[in-house]
Length: 229
Image (tube, rainbow, N blue to C red; front, side, top):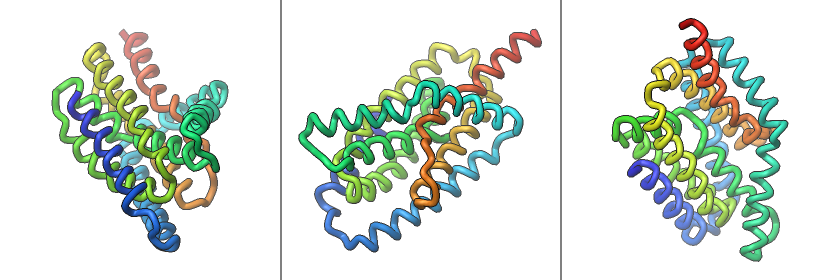
């Protein structure tokens, strides 16, 4: 559990630095920094997605996950959660919810979150999550400066998500083949690329509603193995 704890702590500390120490930097610097991070995120996402070896499964996972996510409307519930926290803290303007949702999605999706948490749970190897902590911390400073205190609270779902994967990995380690990990990571990486697109302001994608897609490869490959047996 050390990996998820360190990752969450890095987000809290660095986001607070952004909120209280980095605020006031010229808007043009914030804007170009966000664009640079957006492009970097797109690159990381595409690079991770290229590790995929089952293109049809990836497409099927994205489509099925999108349908499931839209039916549940995860994006709406996450925004409601952020808005509720915003009201409880006496804030307004929507920046809390935006920071909370954007940071939560970005930090929870992608190959590093999934694989790192699995490694933490299965092998006690926290190196991937430590590396992710550095990346998340850097982004948290920029997010904290531009979107406020909501970014700090994104550490909560990040910890719950990654700790949950680590604990689940320990419980079902026999089902987590390298094939499953690779395909789940590839789908997650596509979601990371979508976050990067949102950063650029090209087109707003409700990435939260795509989160179920990450788990479709697990269900499909497990079903496939059971049927073939």
